[in-house]
Image 1 (cartoon, rainbow, N blue to C red):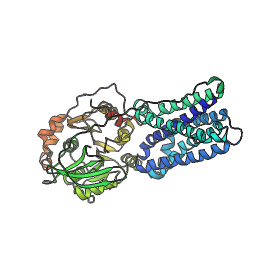
Image 2 (image 1 turned 120 degrees about the vertical axis):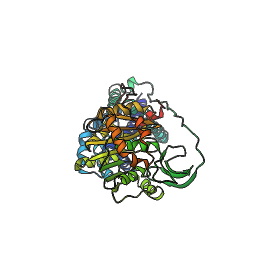
Image 3 (image 1 turned 180 degrees about the vertical axis):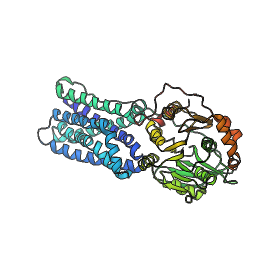
Image 4 (image 1 turned 30 degrees about the vertical axis):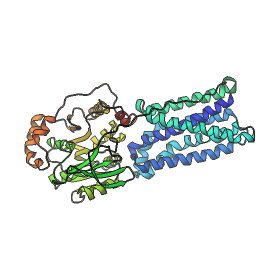
Length: 493
C-alpha cells in the first residue's frame, strides 16, 4: 500500500538523519576535537538544514505530489551522502589547514559535508503529510501519526548507531549501509509502489538496557562542587588526601594529593608515568595532554626547572580547580593551553615543534576520549616526538579495551614496556626500547631525586615488562572504528 511506503520512507529518514548526525561528530573529532563547541556547531548546521528542508518540502508538495517524488528525495539524499565517505578526509584536511578554530572549523566542515543530504531528508516529512492527507478532517490524525513514525525512526537511529553499529562497524561501513538501504527503499517505492506493498513496513528495534554498576565509597568531606561545560567536578577530602573526580559519586579519582606532604605522589599511576624518565632521564621539552589536578606537570617542573612544559587541558574549569585546590601554578616553565589534545597535536605538527617527552593522561568521567585512542592519533603523536624521545600513556589495566589498545600502540610504536599496578602505563621510545640494563642505570641516577616524590626504584623497576599479555587477533582502534567507551561497558578482561 502507498501509505505503508510513505511511513517507511518517513521513519527511515528519521533514522538516517540521527545516524549521520552522530557519526558527524566522530568524523570531525580527529580534526576539531569533541568539545561542546564542536557539537554546538554540528547541531546548529543540522537544525538549519532540516528547517530549510521542511520549507522546501512543503512548497514542493503543493504541485502534484507523488510517491515517486518522495522516493526520489530519499534517493537524492543517499547520493548526496556518498561524497562524505569518499572525500571527508581530503576535505577536512584542507578545512583544518585554513580554519583551526574548532568552533568555526566544525561549522564549515559540517556544512560542506552534511548540509545537503540533511536538507533533502528534511523535505520528506512535510511532503509525506501532503501525500497522506486526502481529507482535511484527517489532517491532524495523519500528521500526528507521521510525526510518531518519523520521531520513532530518529530514536531508533540514535540508539542503533550509538549503542551497536559503532561497536562492530567502521564509520564508512555504517554510511555505506545507510546509503544502500536508502537506495533499496527508493527502488521499491518507485518500481513497485502501492501494487506490491500490502503491509506496512516499519523498522522495529530492541533497545539494550545496560545496567549501571554501583559501588560504595568511604566517608568523605566535599569541599567544592562545580559544573563545567564538560562535566561535574567534585573536590573532596578523605583519609588525609584531597581528590578530584568527575560527574558522579562513584567515578574513579582523577587526581589526589597528600594534605601532609604535597610533594608525595598519592596515585600509583603518576609514579609509573615517571618511569618514562628511566627511558629518557633529562627531558627539556615536555608535553602533557590532560592536566587534572596538575600533579605531574608540577612534579616535572620541580625535577627539571629549566625544561619547557606544555600542559593541555580542554576544560578551563579543571585548570581553575587545580590552581585553587591542588597548588597547581602555571608560569615559570609551565604553559597551559586550553584546547582539545588532538587539535593541539595537529597544530604542533604544522608548526614543526617537537618534544622529548610526551605524556598522555586525558580522561573524562568514563575513560580516555575515543579520538585520543586511535592509530591515527598515535601516528600524529609520533610525529612530534624527537629522536630518542619518550612517550608515556596512562590507561587501565583491566578492561575489554585492553587488547585493542595494546595492538593499536604496538602497530604504531612497536615493542613497549607495559607497567601494571592497579592502573597501566605504556612506555615507549622513539628509536627503540633501551635494555633493562640501561633502565637500571638511569634509575640509579634518578633515585635520590625521585624519592622526594615517593617514587622508589625498588618498587617501580619490577613493573617493567615487555611480555605480550594481550590477544593479537583483535581490531586496531582507528578513527573509523573506536567504540572504546562501549567496549569498556562490557566489563573486564
